[in-house]
Image (cartoon, rainbow, N blue to C red; front, side, top):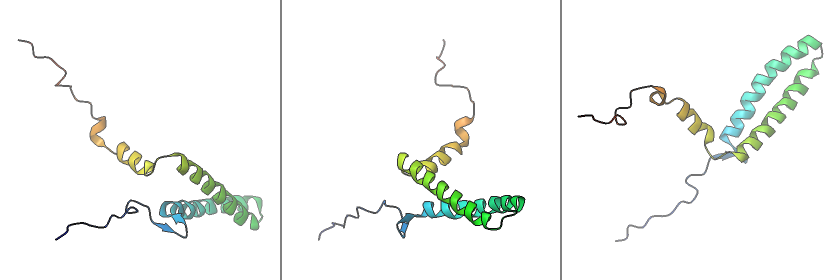
Length: 105
């Protein structure tokens, strides 16, 4: 009886939809939604209706380009690990260092 199992080399790989990672799609969607609201305010201020679409698509393309360049240069799951590090509550609690104090007899 053999206990050998298949080795799945891509088990740690990220999920991709149409060649884009899920976080890429999230950045594009969230960025487009936020930038559409900003462009709507700008287009109302300038009075040109098509300016909203042009500004939101152009700014979303620039945001996505910047996101991909940033993602290439950082290790995988950098933002997840950064968020976990920043939310560690006990890392910022100042307590007396008991182990460093020598015992005096």
